[in-house]
Image 1 (tube, rainbow, N blue to C red):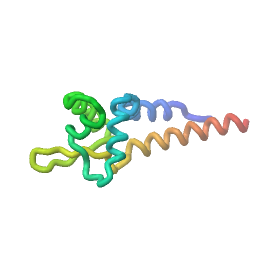
Image 2: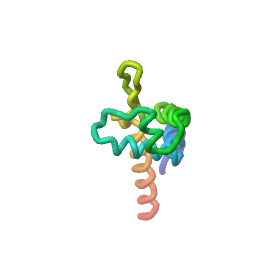
Image 3: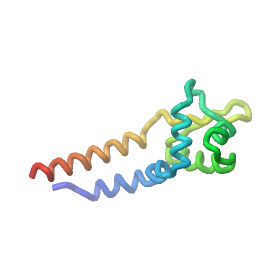
Image 4: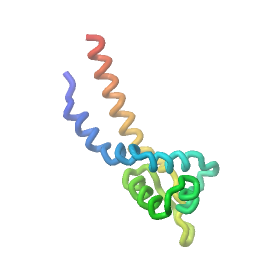
Length: 111
């Protein structure tokens, strides 16, 4: 018998991460950061140019991505450079949740 309350809690814990990933504009920012060749990060102005979003819109979306632990930044003087969070904690949580779901589905198929 499976304890679905654990899955419910897992989903609750992942909700900010999933919401952050669900927006097409934030997806475009994530893809742009993935495409960054030197991994040094991108400034808001660079992201605005490549995504066709305004600087305030980029800043808003970056705030959400930072809160969801998808994006991090570093400062050089007054400049901020944004990059994908290398910690990957939330991605690993999602992967674990999906593994549990697949296991349950496979158990049901085999019963």
